[in-house]
Length: 240
Image (cartoon, rainbow, N blue to C red; front, side, top):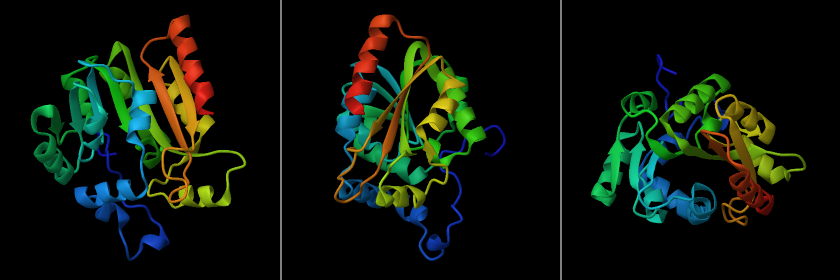
């Protein structure tokens, strides 16, 4: 944290295994980041189709958007991507042009300029980089950015009972030092949102290359009616 701002790229983790190689600095290069996502076979299409569920003309805010690759999987939406990494923003603008609005901007500044104006907010892979206080500020700002009918979607690494030793090892070696359990993530989100649903997935990456447990949360700015809640529960059951 710096003042009241939310940092999308927290500082270097103090891990001995990173004394000679700064993975954060390496992955800050958009081309290396894109190659890494290809190697681990990150399934953005699955994530977008099942959980983001964008509709044409939706207004979407992507926090920590990176080089904006998620745009390849979105319909004709009004997309705003923010990131502190100027190289990412430059690459996104070069690749996608006017298809998205890319800004080197802080989340608190974005919310102050455009409160209650987004149908969907995405915070992909952020919470496990932030301590509880910073996560709470992020989630509160996300709620302030949403329309009353809008929702936040997050995904992060997640510890769970009876997890394989390899999966736990990969989670412990993550660049983010605040990987949590499902109840811990939910506890944070429920302090900011009136309704939160969680989904545990083991299939967001190629399991032979990167066996990794993910939690997706969908947090709604307003309570759901019974029909909408039943639909969400159906997806929840499918994802378990």
